[in-house]
Length: 273
Image (cartoon, rainbow, N blue to C red; front, side):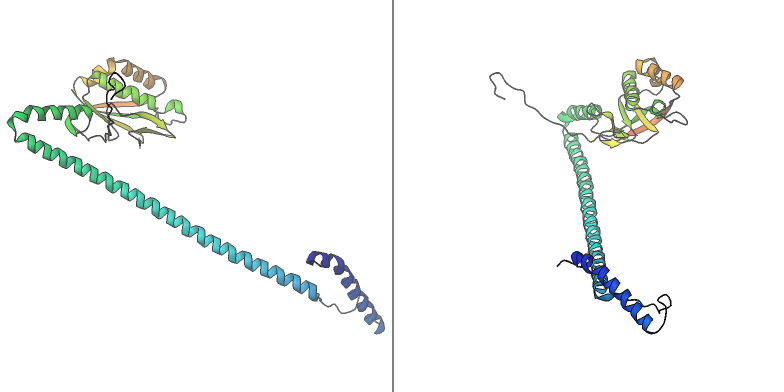
């Protein structure tokens, strides 16, 4: 017979039997039932139930403790794996940068020793500057774009499209090299919204947005204001309160971009490549 069935069948019978015996003893001594000394009586079944309950509680506590320890161990292992992978990526990126610098140094030294290759070296430098693969230095302007004061909605905040207009306007005004929050911009760069942050070259940006543009520091501001993008920014300043400050600089240094090129072969007639 199961425990529940046993309790259902016998619990009330044993209680009535206990009360009946108590009443008979009290009447034999001439006492009233109400004045009979009270006793606590758990019984075998009650003791069994309490013992079983205690075992269940202890088992649950032990299992919970084991699960907690196991979960914490797994979490620490995952965190360790993530940190290790991140450190490895950072190390690989640093080694790649160092190797690229070493290649450029050896390339420059080799070409510098060859008089006939002097023109090739100059061409490589010019193409590297335009492609953004080498760091550059020169005069230009420093532009700081920021949200309106007390901005409480996207309408009063700088959007990715606003930064796109700003950069395109500077290119149109004659900028030769541009960086945004330290990220060098190339023809492969994208300025877009990813989640809740604006990203460029897969790096999240934080306001204020600082644009550095190398070019003629005396003419860039005026020529930018004459572009369509410059006029759009003037409207943003007047209508929604976005802030834009352009400061001429005598010397700016822009880092090289992390460029990953993809190569393709031209398909020849007849399907051959």
